[in-house]
Image (tube, rainbow, N blue to C red; front, side, top):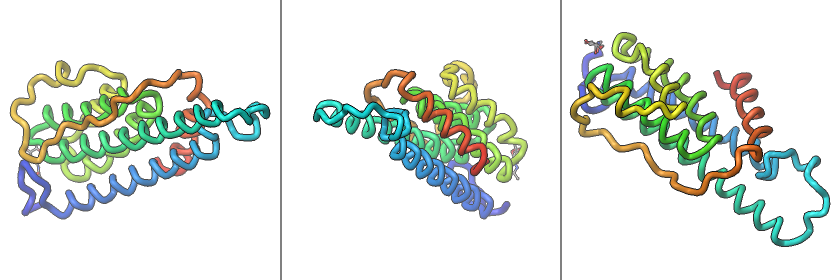
Amino acid sequence: MEGRQYGGYGGCTDSFSVFGFLAFILALLDLILDLQANMGGTGMPRGIRSVNNDDADTEKDSLCQENAEMLQATSACYSLLRGFLNALAAENSECANRFMCEGAEEASTAGPIGEVIANVASLNAGSWLMRVNATMFRSVVEAGQTGAKLGGCALRFSQCFGLPSAYRYPAVYRGPQLPSEVYQPLLQEIMDTARDTLL
Ligand SMILES: *[C@@H]1O[C@H](CO)[C@@H](O)[C@H](O)[C@H]1NC(C)=O
């Protein structure tokens, strides 16, 4: 454990955990983009989609939506990774919880795909952080789940004073929200596949 310094990432376990979580996030993102491409961005498998979509507008809408989904998924993954790195740099549990919560909250704010990513990824983040310090990070999973439900991280973890120098706020995506019924089949698919292959 020597070499670990507060306010940065130092020790072996830290780097190991960062790469572990990074690998998970990239695999998750790949998975989502894959599933989403197979479903043609409408949340419906291509085969089931209505046949009479030869007009250019439908095609264009579907492309725009595919891009919006991709952006949402990518930025949600970034927020989670940022939250994870912030938590790793935290000086106490309260701040670690707050930072993990924030990452999940930002991801969830991006929309329903972001919410799924926040749920799945905060579970995984917790398992890596526990390897670094099981005492300090004992409730980060809960904190992440709170954030995924948009539970108000700043108020919930108000006893975190002072941000480490490595801290960066985890926000990126501020695009339009897409209607939730569009996502249901895709979300179900992401959760099932993530459960089977990644957790
Ligand atoms: C783990 O965290 C606790 C509480 O924040 C701290 O007191 C302890 O020194 C840490 N242990 C290690 C090995 O860094």
